[in-house]
Amino acid sequence: MQINKLSLATILLLSFSSLGEENKSINSQFKDAYHQYQTAIKTNDTEAQTKYAKQSHELGKKVYGESDINTASLAVNLASLYIDSQQYTQANALLLSTLPVYEKEYGKKSLEQIDIYFALAKSTPRKNQRKVLNYYRKILNISDNHKEENPKLNAQMQLDVGIELLSIGSHKSKVILEARDYFTKHLPSNDRRVVTANFFAGKYYLARKNLSKAIDAFEVNLPVFEALDGPTHPLELSTHAFLIGALERKGRSEEATKHCIAIGSMTPWDDAQKPTPLYRVNPKYPMNLARRGKSGYAVIEFIISDFGFVKNAKVLESKGGEWIEKESLLAIKNWRYAPRFENGKAVETTVSVHLDFKIN
Image 1 (cartoon, rainbow, N blue to C red):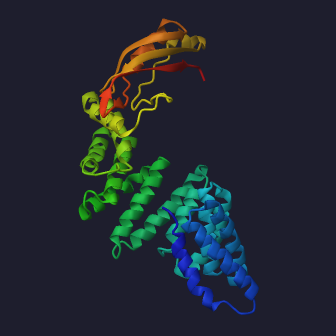
Image 2 (image 1 turned 30 degrees about the vertical axis):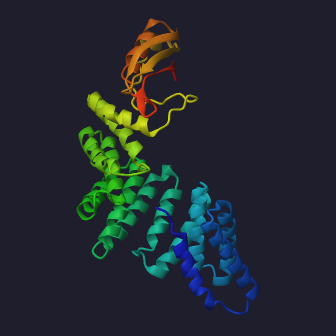
Image 3 (image 1 turned 90 degrees about the horizontal axis):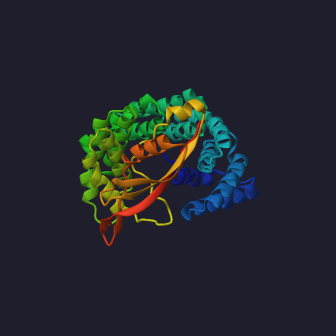
């Protein structure tokens, strides 16, 4: 979830009129720095945003005081920029000093706390997972307290938090499914929130190794993508890719083919770059080599068919013996690719890959 810098700007502008007259020079410097910061947001100049956010925060402390809510809002602006530039330590320190001010001003269960808890979770090292999970739990508790008057916001928080929890492998990411239930009941199927919830529900089920439910969740969005005119949906390519993997693992290769073709038709072929398999099976390390600690490699040439299958695979070069060659060929025959498209039609193309067998 992104911190809304412009909404914070409104809070500050409204309070300019209450500034004291005794320090006009600092007030003037502050107004100028903050105006430059706002301009940098509108022009998307991230370097200038950070520069003027720092100036605004330092000057704001002199204008408003260390413990004022306006100073705290300036600190949140700066912390969000630190997070964007991966300066997590600086962001975390600012946010922790700001949190008590927000709690005093708005209360510990206020919606205003949510942005800070999101930012704290993002700026806390992943090794402190308990802390990270605690911040996300606080967000869910706050949004749940406001569920009755704002159920849509609660569902959005469940989805946003669930996506973050999924990225760190937490089973608590199951809240994605609750958000999905709400959105699918109350919004049209082509609403951005419904499409996003379906997509991440699919990813949640993949993480739980429930391939059937993952496939169902991903496939719900396909009619929405097909109905679009013009540019493709941002999640369409990834949806096809995840479906290929899930369907292949279920042994449904023929069904996966249409998704290989869909990706091929969406993405231009680059002769300068080796194509990436959409689904791959890793070759087994020959036990006779593993026991002796031996390494090897194989260079395999093959044709990517117009349906994205691998065919006519052959060894161009190898080291390590016939077992290296055998295992390489066995694995590659199960790979799937997006076919090359020429003049709107899928065609066959020949490529090669280098497979290394190494003992770590």
